[in-house]
Length: 177
Image 1 (cartoon, helix red, strand yellow):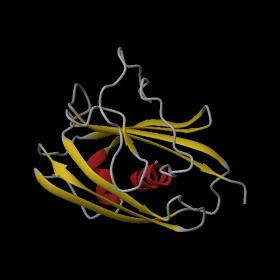
Image 2 (cartoon, one colour; image 1 turned 180 degrees about the horizontal axis):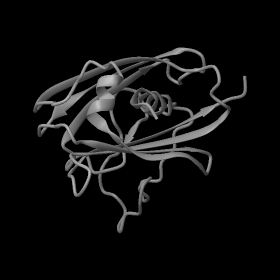
Image 3 (cartoon, helix red, strand yellow; image 1 turned 90 degrees about the horizontal axis):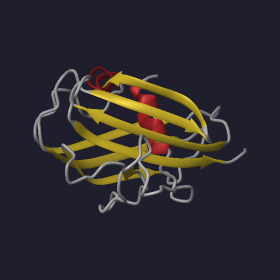
């Protein structure tokens, strides 16, 4: 799966009207205890943290999408800003899971940096510590089927035993046309 498609799905999955997350359960695995951190990311987009943002290697200040909720057949505009706490180098990976209802459509590990470059975002690796802004426009295909999509993306510094960069989760429901 193309990174731009994952960005699209994650952004598209940020429909405010369809958003729901159980804060006692990680989208990838279970927490031993209920979480004590705020999963919300400012900006009106209900894309949320699925890891403790205090320990993430990227501090996300804001995620904005337009239109919100996303619309099939329209161009989705995404702006994200924050701060990189530690250099992100080649070898970083992204574990992606996309579900339609309870059915897993995609569950794979992607090379984050090479896919970031292919996605034509405003950022490429290595990503140095400091302020970060990502801007991406993505056309949403007219062929997106109706249903509730759940998207989770975990980013790690490297494939084996890498440190967690961040984990994001979002949901969106596309209605029948």
